[in-house]
Image 1 (cartoon, one colour):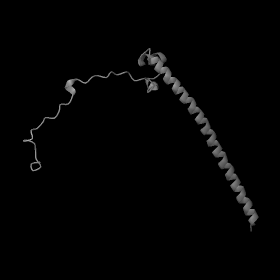
Image 2 (image 1 turned 30 degrees about the horizontal axis):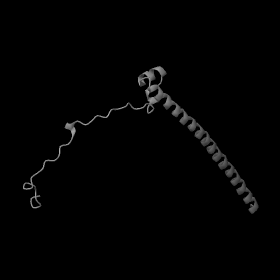
Image 3 (image 1 turned 30 degrees about the vertical axis):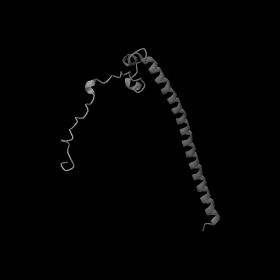
Image 4 (image 1 turned 90 degrees about the vertical axis):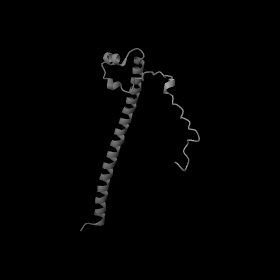
Length: 114
């Protein structure tokens, strides 16, 4: 029969192996997350720089020219090009709503007829 001390030693060994395995895997996740965070910061900076460059280019050329000259896909520049300026038109008098026609009080519906 196995002694209590031997059982405790086996349990302890199994627990230590599990603890080490869990610690190694948690450390690997933390390290990968740290690399990903650093890479994301780099990508964010590149996106900011690219957007600024595209907007500067848009001041002197069309998007079609930029796509041809830079040999990039139009979809790669999506969301980076400023929207064209739009003019605000004054509303013509014809487009205004007409006021509702006034009904004489003698012809207005009453509670009894409504």
